[in-house]
Length: 510
Image 1 (cartoon, helix red, strand yellow):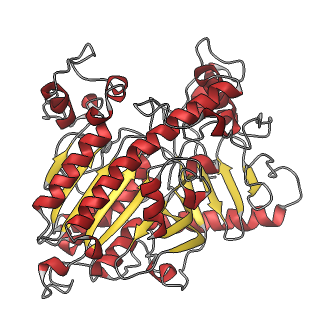
Image 2 (image 1 turned 180 degrees about the vertical axis):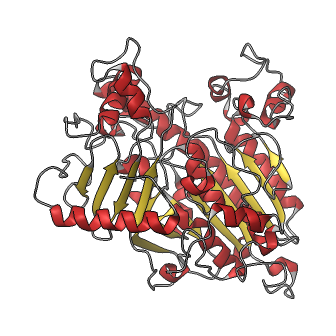
């Protein structure tokens, strides 16, 4: 196995120019530069925030109203079992954009800025023929300012100002803020910004998805004769878990997760049990509360679906669909009542698995059941865009898998790094852990592996470990780690985790 490109090597190469970053992989001169500009493949990358996998028909949900996503899935390669690198925003966003693990990029928890010397895909591609734009939530630092190879920047979030770099103007506001001002709204917050709750309560035409839709369609029209890279990131279905389509779905059709009543025994991680207690207090304890929450969550997915449909129609109307790679995915999932937990930050499938669709020109749609990781996103896109594959990426190109072959790494790895924002405790404290124990849990690391045959091992450095047989127990309700029945599997997967850690330079001891 060839050594992966370390963060230091990435940074060093970046100082010599992004086009030369991955030697032999891609540059303006090595990517068939003699072909006409319009024949270079376009990339339309659409992603959401906090969308679990089972929110469209391709992943088993035929009740949710998502006709455009269902249509896209029917035309796409569908990765049935796709996993994040870390189930929280900033770390996994960094991985999706750079191809580096959170511990390699340094973005190991929320609100750590992506270093400017670590390139994103447009910088890695290094082709000046491309027009590039990023629209929507970024959450990788300096939220509203263009960066990392994107020429155009459309921002929607003003809540990250305290994390801006020195010298950035904290009085500057997002594009969406100015859109609301132009439509006669007045900021609802003391700092003269619009809160997420305020934005979510607007009419459909004034909410964030419709705003991004219009900006994206305008970009496509302006650059229809040039190769382009367009990233659109919707905030929805992320909290505050309400919007203009709250009543879109019949409440009688809302199913509770099959593992809703899993109480989490004492052999489950204490951190998870504290999170469960917090979620019961915040989101409700009974079925009625969670059904109502899921109904609103589904409405947010439908809201995104409407805008995705409009963007894809514009792509079709402009005659661009046949030369555009379309990606649809999310930065992580949401428990949405599974194990009576809401939100993310755990290793359970509902938080760690996400939808991943790829509509690829001149390739038929297919369903791939192999377990794959979003760490493979960048090398796969680089390969599809004419750069070939390069083993120095932390991940691997999945193009051989898409074409019916095999890939070198068939185990999926997931990491959890200390995140001070994840250990939420209900008002009044908890009887599950002391303050000292809670501080200890905030510094907990976990490393997990999921095998091709469905075994999932989660090793913690300071909390309970977990082992699940996903084939027999897809809801992860029975932790087999201490059962004494599967020591061979634990040894094998532990060795796999340690080997992976050595390969990617992860020094956490689990």
